[in-house]
Amino acid sequence: MIVIIEHVHLNIKPNQSEAFELAFQQAKQIIYPMDGLNAVQLIKHVEDNHHYILMIFWDSIEHHTEGFRKSAAYQEWKALLHPFYDPMPTVQYYQPHMLLKKKEPSQ
Image (cartoon, rainbow, N blue to C red; front, side):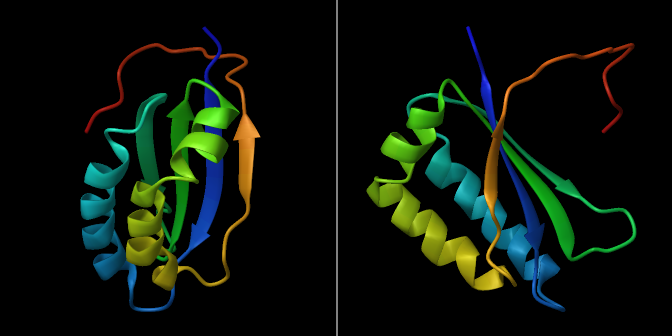
């Protein structure tokens, strides 16, 4: 099975990262039931707490573009999260290519 990674660099408005993270907790529940969704990962920058990478793992690009993006759930997601973005991010799609893994990362 081919997995597609939706990859997005997020810049959050100043002094809004805590509120964004709380909103993202709600957003996870919105996207979770979507067909073709495998995983969602939000990665926070170590030194700039207003910068994140969002990776969403889909079965196909169409599960994102035709499924999620055209759903009522996406309208909820958009209303909840898009007000935090400055500027609006660009979505890119990737396929896993290579992984060297020694152990699970500590939480």
